[in-house]
Amino acid sequence: MIIQCFHNNILIKQIRTPFFIIAKQSCIFLFILATASAPRAQEYATDRLFMKEFNKSKCRNLVEKKINNLKKIRVMTLEQEALLNQNIWSKLRVKLPLSPGEKAQLRKLKEKGVYSNNLSAKNIKIRNSIKFKVLRHKCK
Image 1 (cartoon, rainbow, N blue to C red):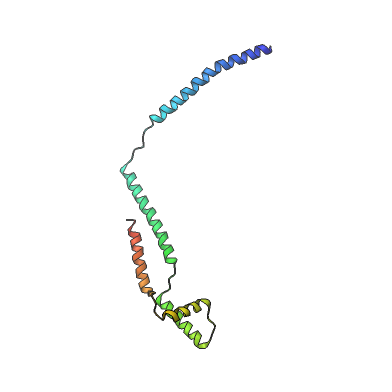
Image 2: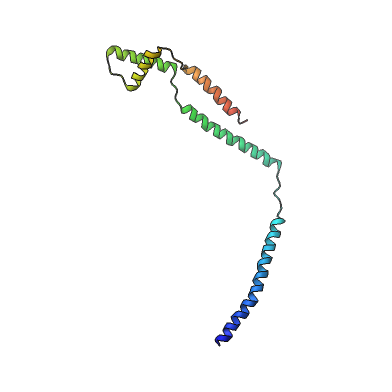
């Protein structure tokens, strides 16, 4: 009985092996045939227009984020510096203690004088608007 079961197993394996080889080869062949004859995607003119607009809007979004970050950067204006200098001189007259930033500004004033290369608020706004306009123009 054991010999007969063993013999049957060998026969079944011998029958199955060629079948699985043929089945595997036919599946691979069908897969290659199906992928080779797959239709190519047709490109329409509207697709190109959509992609162009998509790229423009993506560029605009990036530029607007950059502009918002640039707007958050604070630059000392000429008016603010004049007010700070006036505050330092009045504190010195009244003999009030100066903050570390005011001490640094006082040292700078003593070394270089009252000369300032800061722009007025109006000029800073004009300079930034030109810079922002150039950035926005790159996306057109």
